Length: 338
Image 1 (cartoon, helix red, strand yellow):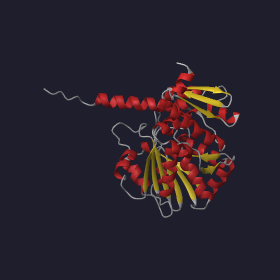
Image 2 (cartoon, helix red, strand yellow):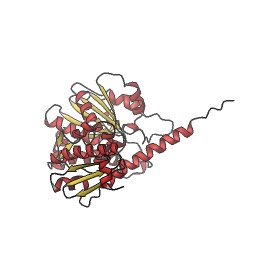
Image 3 (tube, helix red, strand yellow):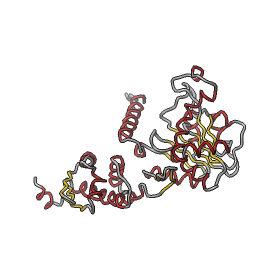
Image 4 (spheres, one colour):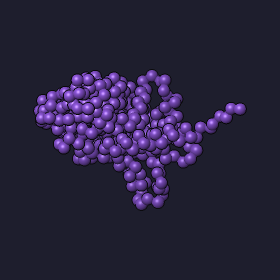
């Protein structure tokens, strides 16, 4: 069937790109992003100068056109669009949420010391940031690469700069993931340092190494293992517990009861990556059940759709989720009826 036949049957649409830069931003320098629309919607896209023609099933063509129009709006306001964001925009349009595509990367949360703007790249991330603003305590649960820790630290740095708090406290449980602390070289501080490294990296990116060192010396920033929190009351602080899936029930309760006046807490974790010994229940899993109906506590669940690393990471997370679902079904006992 020819393109003309498709157009006569209402199965072709056209959209005009205002500038060559707009075309390149969406489709790529070598048009490498065009196949995404065929993979996700089954439509064909043909580019002729500044005009883009979309052919295929009528409903899918309409979705593709709507997605491209929304992506064009994002590009025209100066944002960049990558392959992951294109797939995400298509998913939103397919769910009837095309009007929300424009919310992607709209609001600036923070600005790093190098001048880079930190923005929410998915609706899940926006929900997460809004929950932190609206609640005293927020739980964020989701896979690696969804920005749980980074966004929390960005919010903490902004709060410190705005003098809403007096200090930032970042902590993690030092749970072995295959190796034993006793076999690592150095004293206790050196042994636990590798567990805290991701927190250091995020802080350095947000405020720079020199500013970070000054704030540490002043006592305005503290990065420490979870065990160091016992017996303290943390007032006027932004407190982040990272990798919370590796806390025990006792550790989680101890941490949550450290909160003092004027403080805000964010607890992040991935319940699919628990490194606790067999038989030990995760304090994060328990807390999500116990605290789900408590006022002023927000719970946000991020998914593979909120992964903002390389698109392959998103595919890996999705594959593991599907595998876990299949395994759960296979483990369920079958009921044989006579």
